[in-house]
Length: 299
Ligand code: GDP
Ligand code: ZN
Image (cartoon, rainbow, N blue to C red; front, side, top):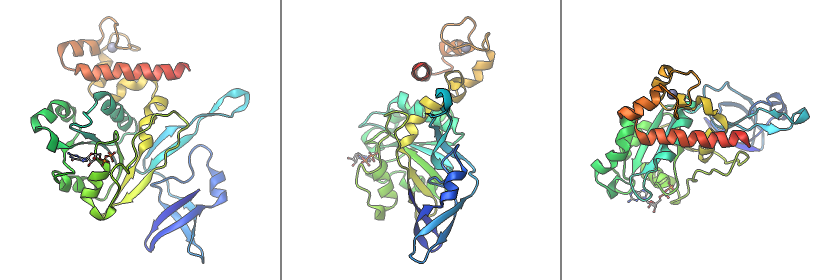
């Protein structure tokens, strides 16, 4: 129930005024990333009085049963308020990048209308051309890809530039080098290797705290392990095609407007996959992710 508020006079550990907690039932009244008004008490602790309207929000739907007659109450659980971009850290090797995982993250970014930056770390372990065999596709799709080595310092300066002055939601599989990259950018952070949490998929009621790490040059990096569980509960099976930037443009050209792009006649998406205009791996991600979401809808 406590937040550390960064003020002009340093951090102030603050609680939230009770009335503010009662005001909003549809969302978290205060969340990491919010801009707040705080009253500092004589003992140096603070009381959060008010939150400014959020420009953007990275959230998940924490619908809970609790309504009368068993209906669910829609409630937004905020992972991060006011994010400017999503930064997804993958490794070129060890662990090898997984297309399904990356595509899942990108869906979440598209859904939240957040620009996504892909960091391909551990470039010291492979040849650039071999890293590009995987990540090059994403550059073609329009996602910026930054090749880095936290070990050798490659690309670290560029990463610092990309993160400067912004609030970035950071996520990625464990072991890809997130902690080490942040340490390379800002040695005094001194994060333990492995300290940045891995993404979890434990289910809808898992709460994973978001941490904001202030950057020297301004801006914050938010460790958002909760980001990965978003898609399954927030994206409906029918709207998933909109969040695949390479599939979406073909959807209006399908014969049926409720086309599922699996085996329908005159499906423009299938035609594009067959022609090689849509990467088969991306199409496969789309199908698998949709199956997964559909399963969740039934249960
Ligand atoms: P996290 O789980 O994403 O925070 O990953 P860590 O930062 O804990 O790094 C996981 C492992 O990968 C550690 O053994 C790091 O030393 C190693 N590692 C991180 N970045 C690099 C890199 O750029 N190159 C190589 N070769 N190893 C790295
Ligand atoms: Zn179709």
